[in-house]
Image (cartoon, rainbow, N blue to C red; front, side):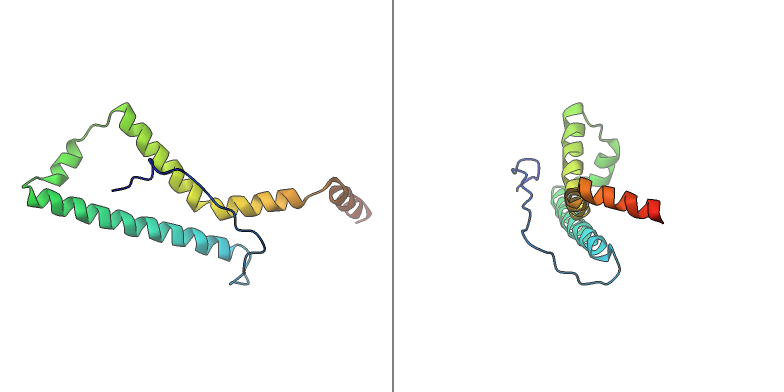
Length: 120
């Protein structure tokens, strides 16, 4: 069993222009986020199903154990690290597009925009 907190975290940036599938601005980014959520939910459901089956086979009341569980600081930190990893993957494309837009801005372009507004 591999836990996401033990694997090295690597986000690879694809080079070149991304294909656009939808005409509406932001729709490709939203669909990317939805697919990350769907993948995460599917994995979570499979893991929960496995835990329930193992517990049942061992004669354990998993639901009651979960309700009574009190997490220590280390467990809370592990959960937060996992949550942050998930959010990084979820918002990856939106952040990348924002960074690309920011990188494309230049002082010359900014000054040109100010001149165009002033001429308005």
